[in-house]
Structure formats: structure tokens, C-alpha cells
Amino acid sequence: MSTDVPEPVPQPGVGPTSRLTRRTFIAATGTATGAAVAAGVTATGTRPVSATEDLAPEPGDGTATRVSFLLNGRRQSLVVDNRTSLLDLLRERLDLTGTKKGCDAGACGACTVHVDGRRVNACLTFAARLDGAQVTTIEGLAPDGDLHPLQRAFIEQDALQCGFCTPGQIMSGVACIREGHTGSAEEIREWMSGNICRCGCYVKIVRAVAQTATGGR
Image 1 (cartoon, rainbow, N blue to C red):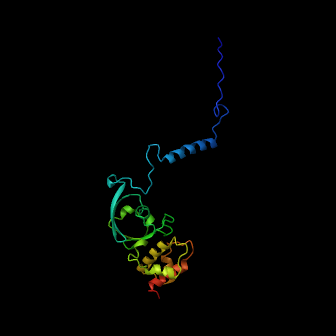
Image 2: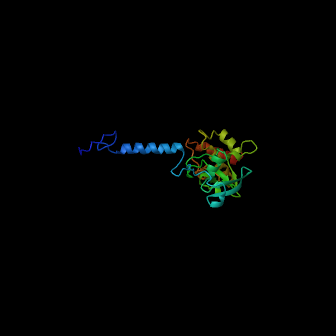
Image 3: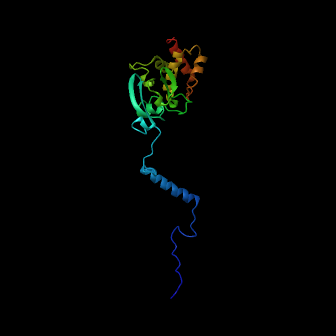
């Protein structure tokens, strides 16, 4: 009887000539990851949760808070994830998209709104801290349907181009006038410096604020 062991039959991609290269490893890993994402599940079998979603229907576990506040004159009572910004609450849950998301880091002013009469960057304001507050967005600036004087001035002075920063510019300009920082063009520029216009309409923006501050004169 022969004691010879037969040679193994070579299999494609297996054997001493097959090497795991960086390229094949990345390709295999990418395929597996793509399949998992496409299926919408993680290793634990749960759907990934975004930072703007409520993690609990009630605030009992400390990850969410129930808040009640006035938004453009109307009462809002809802549960918010403690990590949710006022900007994401306005845009993603309340469908008030006039407030724009620019840098999302408090550097451009596109998300400027008023909280208790003061201008704030909505992207840096936690929604969970709004309980009892009064919030005004660009949609609530002229609730009766007529344009606010500063909105009219922006049109008359042609103080916008692409329009992306305009809601934040107007909300900041209204606060600037209310705060009394309109004594000169230089003062307006200083107190409006937190609002960036990538189209470079600064001269006309200053004129619009000055026109409104002086009653159109």
C-alpha cells in the first residue's frame, strides 16, 4: 500500500503565491462596510443615531430634556436631545429653514437669531437651555406679512447677492439698531463684524442698517 499523500489541489487565491496586500485588504474591508451601511444596521443590530435625534421619548434618563418656549410668538413644547443645537432644532424638526447653517462653529453669523431680545448664534446655543425663553427667527421678524423696515432697506440698497447670509445679517442688523450701535458707519461695521458676507456686500449692508436706524433718511 502506498503511503504517499496526494498533492493538494491549488485553489484560486489560496496558497503560498496568494498574499494579502494593502489593496486587497482595503477592498475587502470597504465591501463589508458598505454592505453593513446599506443594510442600515451596526454590529449590535441597531440603526445609527444622529446627534440631532432624540435618544429617548421622555427625559427621564438624562439624555433628553423637555422644554417649553415661545417661538415667533407661538408656544412650543417638546423633548430635545441634550446635544441638539437651536439651529438643528429650527431646521430639522421645526422646518424653519430661514436660519442658515454656514460654518456651524459660531464664526460666520449666518444662523443669527434672537433669544430674549439678544442676538445669538443658533449653532452654539443648546436647545435644552431654551425653557421659558422667547426666540425670534427671520420668519417671525414681520409676523403680519409686511416686510420689516430693515428687510425693505436691504432690497432698496441692493444689500444682498447670493442671499445665503442675508437672514443672519438682517437679524444681527435689527439687534444692532436696538442696541444703539449705529452712530456711524464705522460703529455699524464693528458691531456687524460677526456676520460674514462671502459676496462682499458690506458697504451696502452698512447703508441698509444706517438707513433703517435713521428712519429712512
